[in-house]
Each structure stands twice: as C-alpha cells, then as structure tokens.
Length: 123
Image 1 (cartoon, one colour):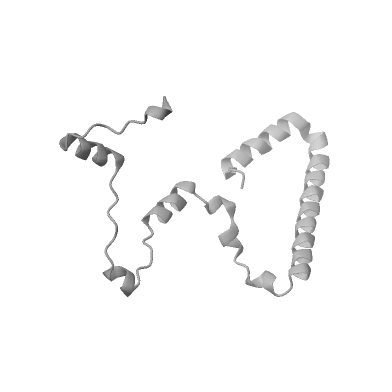
Image 2 (cartoon, rainbow, N blue to C red):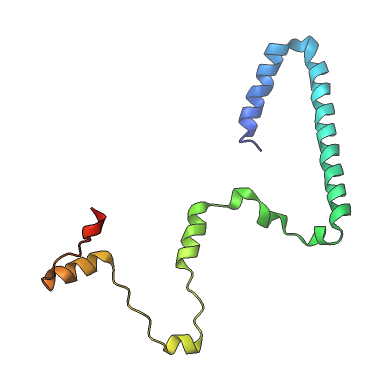
C-alpha cells in the first residue's frame, strides 16, 4: 500500500516518537485510529450504496478486471497488433490484394526508368 514496507513504517514510527514526544504520541495515535475507522466506515457505506443502486449485477462485476493498474499501453497495443482477424473459409480462398509500399513503388519506377510523378499545379 503506497509503496510502504514494514521497514519504512518502522522508521516512520520511530520518527513520530522523536518528533511528537511521549506526551503527545498517544493523543495522535488515537486520532489516527479514529481517522482509519471513519475512512473504513465511509468505504463500506459507499460499497453498500453501490450494491443497493446496481442491484444483483454488483456481485457479478469482476472488479479486478476494471483495475486501472493492470492496463499497460504497450501490452494492449502489442495484443491488438498480434491479433489475427478471424478468417472464414470463404475469405481464406480469396486472394489477398497486394499492397505495395511507397519505397517499393519508387524503386520499381526507377528500374522502369519512368520519370517521377510531378504535379505542375502544386508549385
């Protein structure tokens, strides 16, 4: 949670003891506990309200699938590029059109010794 490990929490606790002192530390610890309880109650209330408003579909939603931390744009693009479109048997027998790149077209024109296309109206 927030990148805090046990070591970091221990260091924060020791710093709190030195900065707050033994007199004020119990008061602030009680306030922290009250804040955590309040936040937990608010989260439970929001969950209950969502369950009431969404109805039975709330339990059917896969919340882990909607976690924004799982979205890696590189993975999404890689999967989209690697996905092969579904090929039906009729489409598989049809020849695919040959698409020539601009570089290949230029090389072909140079081999055929044709002049490069030029538009006199564009200048």
